Length: 119
Image (cartoon, rainbow, N blue to C red; front, side, top):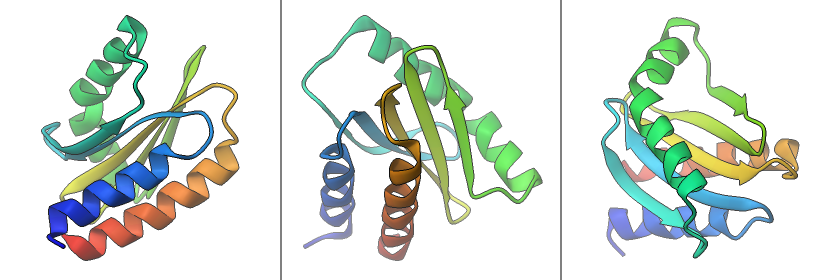
């Protein structure tokens, strides 16, 4: 299995967690490397994904500058977790506001570590 197929498989595994709506692997410049989404495309989700894409460079810089592995944003109806993947990527998980953030953080961190080994 190629590296990109392995990454896609890891993203799909995260998407299967309860309340997860989308998982995107970004380069630190905001370019999408790979993604996985549930079938419910709403304008809200598209706006949130665009916000993530636009802010990945800033979030990445903040993470590097403060030696952070994870940054979490909690909006009114969406939770967004950004996890660093080495120096080149950011694994972004979008979930609704009822998600178990502790479980989601643990699983996203585990997947980020696995994906980093593929890159």
